[in-house]
Image 1 (spheres, rainbow, N blue to C red):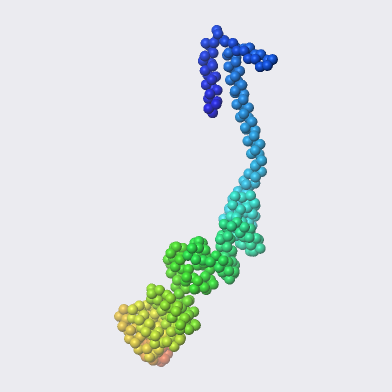
Image 2 (image 1 turned 45 degrees about the horizontal axis):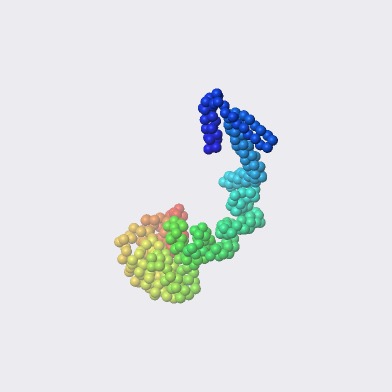
Length: 396
């Protein structure tokens, strides 16, 4: 651009001053060997400017020709890369449309000369998995694993595919290669939270949950549910082994977790099964005294006997607070049946049926009425039982 401006400036200057030399054109003599040139100054300047312009045009044309020649060597590669992009886009659209055969075919074509062949192979593996083409899926994953930075992505894909096929043991073998820890990527921890419950590996899940909670990898509701599932299963499993294991697991729980009535009831059942009813009753009395609720009322009759008078005393102290609670009335009714107080049991069951007309309450009332010889009332209660909603089990 600067050279062109200089040339234009020279031409303009020449045009401006040329009239001054019309009367005195000057004289230029050039001798080169045997050749001699004689001309005026204006003609010489004009020839010089024309020569410079021709040289610049020649240089520009040569540069253009050379660039075209060099770029033509790369044209086939560019064409292939452009085609790969089109195939990849077509494959992505097919995946969104759940056209698995087209997605697999397009992604494979895009992987040949694409910018991200590993990504194409992973998507092709997913499309093959959707078509139950296990061998092709594994081949694509093996090809993708050739990229060192794709090892984790390939492993996570394998785990996901195994889980979708119900092959949880194979998924666990692949997950163990990644060794989930607090330093693991979030994706590994998330998939571990999905896999461990399916494997019923509650110990591993329990260890991983604080990490997931700290990283906020799941909602509070999901974390709480998984925590309860892990704790309840661990306590229940320990309750089938021995007292030492049960105490070990129980005291491994945090203080707030041990205050969960459901977990406490599982622990108490374990103590009673190992012949430690006295210790279990102490904890049960504490629950009834400080944390009475429907869960405890439903489980209480199965954990006490007619001789456990202290628990009955604690329960009756909540009469005023739970007078209109059907589960409380049903609990007291069953305890009355244990002590053979049939009449009081009937009164309690009538209250339970009035507060919550469930099938099992009506059925229990009918059985009590039969024992008291009230057959007409019993028949009516049976009819109510057949038309009322039911829950898991009967009280009697």
